[in-house]
Length: 89
Image 1 (cartoon, one colour):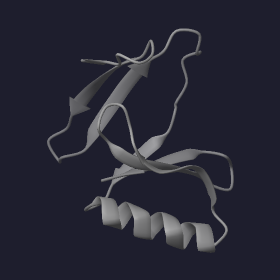
Image 2 (cartoon, rainbow, N blue to C red; image 1 turned 180 degrees about the vertical axis):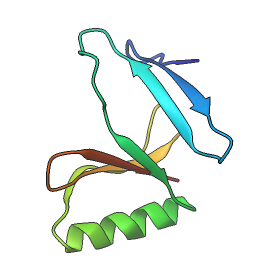
Image 3 (cartoon, helix red, strand yellow; image 1 turned 90 degrees about the horizontal axis):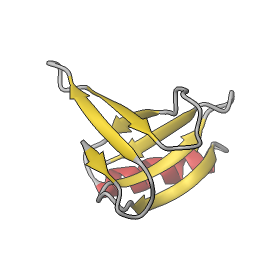
């Protein structure tokens, strides 16, 4: 279980045998809903390259690559239907 020290947010990871993980999170005031999908790539440099290429192709960048409070390096993009995809190292 992870709890943020910066905001009222908790999350828990469920690891699957294949290496995939499902993260369940809660933040007061937000209704239950699917938040986003996340894909882990090889490195911070890979995140940067992928986001730069997506931006050049007109993909909407919701959150540019950054280091989060819980030490993940990630960016968030939106697909054509508004679904969010987190790209992390």
